[in-house]
Length: 188
Image 1 (cartoon, one colour):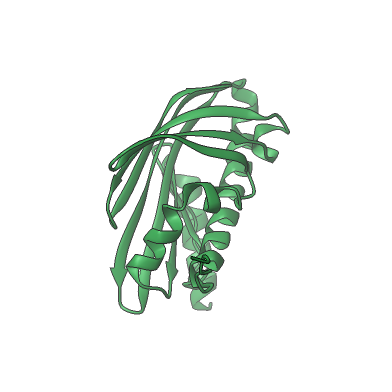
Image 2 (image 1 turned 60 degrees about the horizontal axis):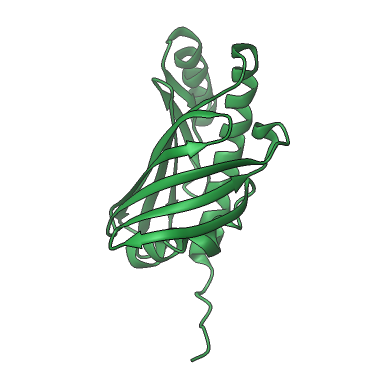
């Protein structure tokens, strides 16, 4: 049995036998690794860029977020140092095609972490998450953890979780591409 086959088998055993635990893992560094623990889903990817570049892309809230598959609108409505509020509109398979508006509080710990939480939103009971950046040999490890409780019937939550995890990994792949692409210079 090959190394990747053993990893998949182990993932299936842990995922099936444990109420919380490993959901999915990819061994390639340019592919996101997805885990779920106590309702918090985390996607992690290694990007061959310096920490400064990763931070620049993540904190380009309006320009970066609009390139994500689920975010239709984003606007910074307030900023005071490393604290800000974002207005976002989501529309994706996990929103079942509905446009969902949210007001998000964001707290930055420069070049290390971005924490966020829902202040108010449509059809969302709670939402909180964090982005973490960690310099490593050959690049930066980028992880995004999210804990969301949508206002939907329990019967739809497994479908919601699957669709939102697929979206999370798609978003991480897009971030990877944005981070490794050369920065576009703005004319003076």
